[in-house]
Image (cartoon, rainbow, N blue to C red; front, side, top):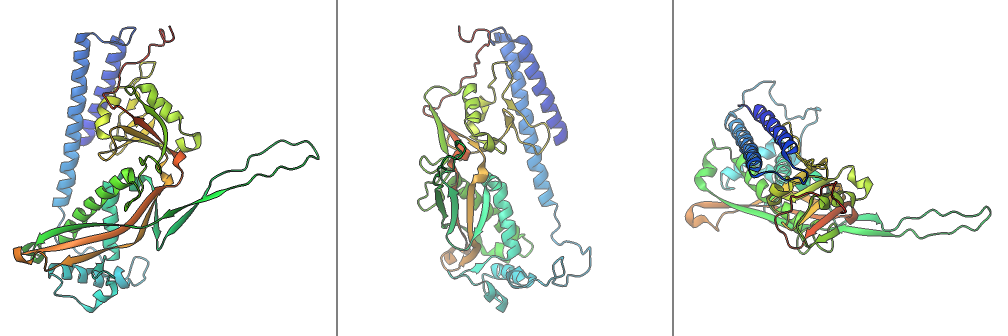
Length: 407
């Protein structure tokens, strides 16, 4: 089966499962042992189809990567060194600089042309070519959900963000009465720059093998490592030597409630409507992967599932009509719901490479280091509501029968 056929089949099985539950539940919302076994089989089939979809998607991506030609055929006029708009590329954006960087990497930085002096880093390395840096950012966005949801800013120094701490309120007055004046107060949040780095070792043979796609390998490895470290900090960072995460207890999102009992479906509804209406328009959930298996079984008081799986490829699953994003770095005892565009990510300058020639010379390997400086803060805590689960346990999947509620 194709991926789309599997997705369509999963959607049909899911509809059958919902219809089965609705038609076999008793008045208290319970299933008999036999019906429960049948429903469990349907769930297992959905999980198997999901695994098959993900496996085929991975295989398709791998097939596309492996089928790329080593040398691309010439399909147009010879390149003149100009961009699409006709302007000549200069500096680190030029093809000459990009080729010089790859030649330097493959030759253990023994073949360095004069053009490399345009990208000398203050720490002794070389700045990444412009196109190379763009593709590295692409990998970060694929690995890091927060970079796709937050507001990204490129800064050259300490960046100040002005915030209206209090807003003026209107008041009724009698005709000819005296005006009352209130004070509008403003606050500021500063985006700093914390250093993040990733280092790898590769063999000399790998560097000297011109047939190996060295550029793609380094972009992928560095991009995944930086993306994972960033996501952990954007979610859990305490602001000490790293960005401040949305789950930070003092400078993160607003804590709506701390539950002492098992999580229920009503708690998710309270979380949604605990967020002010203007923020709900672009809001979504961020949940730990381990919590989804229980939360997706929740029902409302009419017996309808809160979870809505994606029916077409590329769409997000939903809870109560809002997108769900998952990350292994989300604390198991917390759920976030809000508009994450109010989380600002400040990228300071450009990323850079440097090589460690002598450190691993004894075993025939070369080290490479990529560095970046970045900070992240939520500028309006009220835009993200956090639900804490004090004693996390498997959430309750029972629902309140509207016929017996309040008896």
